[in-house]
Length: 308
Image (cartoon, rainbow, N blue to C red; front, side, top):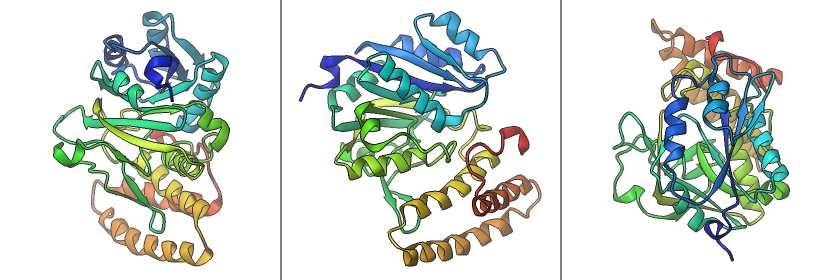
């Protein structure tokens, strides 16, 4: 099989939403990428802070799609894949624009990926580069839980071993465009969060592979467009709603989904009680609305950061 590095036909897709405070750092970092050649594809989700104009001015070679509404990550990445097809690109690198990168990160990913293999890097927190910031690892489909991701753990020997994965974040992931022809596009009912977990399960079921490439290193601000921080009310809302939807979508039986439902409620009630504390009411609101909207069938884009 020919490697991506030899073919050098990669589209870097980033979904932009009000990134003015960090977009220059992202573009500066991309300018230092050593190889292979790539085409930058930006899907702007109706940013109101001038960040799309900054991108257009600094990267006139970029393929910039300006949307008239906040399309979210799932729809934005689907539009990015579509642009890769139209531009004749064979591989797509999904990349959050709240990241920076070691100059050789793309080369390392490209050396591993091929027409049946997807690749993800070692992602570290920007604020503390000693810690892992990713949910690349395994997934327990009965409980809807990520496993063996090392998220928040110190970087070390255990996080520097190449391995096969069951799931990973689209914070940074290199994939053949053909995988989306075979497995289908991202499910836009998620809007954001868990849409990549859903897609990767479908792709791996068709024989695609997902490889962890620790030599490729990316630094992540974490939820910079979602309020900042590991868990914000905005993120908690979508993660709660979408986790219920994800597990139901892939449940192997009604009995297994019933077991998950019992587990979900048993673990959410203690969280709800803790969220009654002063200063945490926004998290309680996010939890309650996330559950309510799932059961009401309200999917897609329903709430914005400002709603919390």
